[in-house]
Every structure is written in C-alpha cells, then in structure tokens.
Image 1 (cartoon, one colour):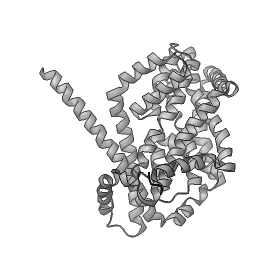
Image 2: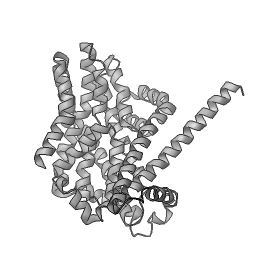
Image 3: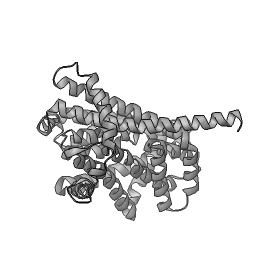
Image 4: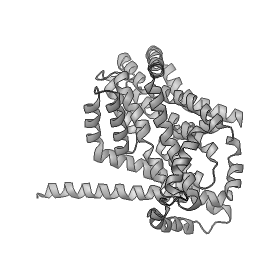
Length: 379
C-alpha cells in the first residue's frame, strides 16, 4: 500500500472514530440536560412552574419553531426536548414544541434558495422547491395539533409503544440498556465540574453545558458525516428521483439518517431545482423522507435516559417519529391534500420572483418576527 493510500485510510479511520465519539457526546449531553433540569426545577412540579408560560400549546409550538430557526437544527432542539422531558417537562408542552421544530427546520433550505436570487427563473424554481417543505409542515401541524389537543392521539400511540420497550412487561429492554454505564460517569464529571456553584445553580449550569454540548456534537457530527457520506448521498438522490414517490420518500429518509441532518438533505436538492434539473413535484417526496429520517436523532437521545424517566423520554421521541410518518401518509396519500403545499409554494415563488424583498420578508417574518411577537403578546 502506498503512503498516500495509507494516509487516506488513516484519515477515514480517524473520521469514523470522531463520529463515534460525537454520537457518545450526544448521549452524554442529553443525560446532562436531563439531570441538570431535575436539579434546577426540583422535579416535575418545578418543571411545570418553569414552563407555565408555555401551557398554551400554540406558544409551545412557536417556541419550538423559533428555537429551531435560531440554531438551524431540529435534531439539536428535539434532543434538548428529550432531555427536558426526562427532567420533568410536561409532555403536553413538549409535543407542540416538537411540531414547532419541524416548522423551524425548513428555514435552512429556504435560505439556500436565496443563493439563486440573482436569476429570476432560477430563484422561482429554487424558492418553490424550498417552501413546499414549509407548507407541508404547516399543513401537518394544522391537522395534527388540534387532534392532539382534543384526543391526545400521538401521545397515546407513542406511550403504548414506549411501554412495550421500557415498561413493566417481561420483554422490557430496561435490563439490556448498555448506555447507562457508558454515559453515567461522563455526566458525573460534568456535575462535579460545576459543583462549586450553590443550589439550583448547579442544575442550571448543567443544562447550559448540556445544550452547548448537543449543539456542538450535532453540528460537528453533521459535518463529519457529510464529509464521509455526502457523495453517496448525492448518488442515492440522483438514482431515486423519477422512480416514484415511495423511492423518493425512502431515499430522502435514508440520506437524512446517513448525514444526521434534514437540512443537509433538503439543501442538496435546492440547487438541483434551481438549475432546472428536477421540478418541485419530483423533489417533493425527498423532502417528506427527510422529515422522517431526522427523527433518528431524538430516538438516539432517548437511549441515554434510564430509570423512571426512560419511558416518557422514549415517548416524546416516538411522538416525533409518528407525527412525521402519519403526516406523510395522510397528506401525501390523499391527492387533494398532496397538492396544497405544491400550489402554495408555486404561488409564493411567483410572488417572490417578482418582488424579491417580499421573499426576504417572508423568511424573516415567518420564522423570527411573527413567532417572537406572538409569544411576547401571549405571555
């Protein structure tokens, strides 16, 4: 083996070792957030008091959307939510937050489409392909949030499924959880590092450190996986486009699991739409697959939670999965509903192409100004 080949192999091994470490860091970070939130809030009662301003599900929805738009990562926000739920955050507040994270994550590919703004035709195609994601997620929330408020649909399904894995049944996976002994010492080190603080300040410091760790780990993990797999991801996208919606949804989910970032998956598609290689209708299924694939991070985060909180942590992670799977099945499965995001995206793209400040105003207003103002007014 030549020296250059040996160096390439060494770099690949180093890259995958870093990926494994970052996955471990995500687990440690979620455990840190959970433990810190318990200390800071004083348990479930304290958690309810802290988040009393978000008892309105619409405020919780906007909080999730705004947080995701700010950090540009639904994986980060949903991982934090899993940790907070394990620390006592009521699941009734967490579910709208997760739905809001789905809305907030669409800003990344919309920002990518702005890169085509110099060409009217390119921008119209790119903006349409990016905002179809926005309108699909908004439609999903308009359908499932009222159902959740009235009937607790997602929570009941997810809770039943979570109980099968970590409940009291004989087939419970609690006793097979190998994550706890791996994560607990590292969480203990973080706690010891801030133990010089007094009282609840220790918990607050742990939450802040945990969130910072999640943000760093998820962002860096996405970059490393992109470096390792983005070529294969592009090949998968190109080979699946035009082979029907099932292939599109499946490959969109697979690529997102590979690169741990729905933003990366959707952003890969926008230049293809802008250049006219593929239409918004052809790219649409990949967007839906990305929604499903991104739920893997919250499931991974839930594995770091043990003890009494394990079931509720897995429940909120499964809510994220079911919300996206049910939304894709219902909306894309019904021709009338399927067309709504496409039609709205096309209309908005035509307006944006003719009036570019209006397109920029849509991005800033929808993801930052409007959620912020509504949250402030309601609070």
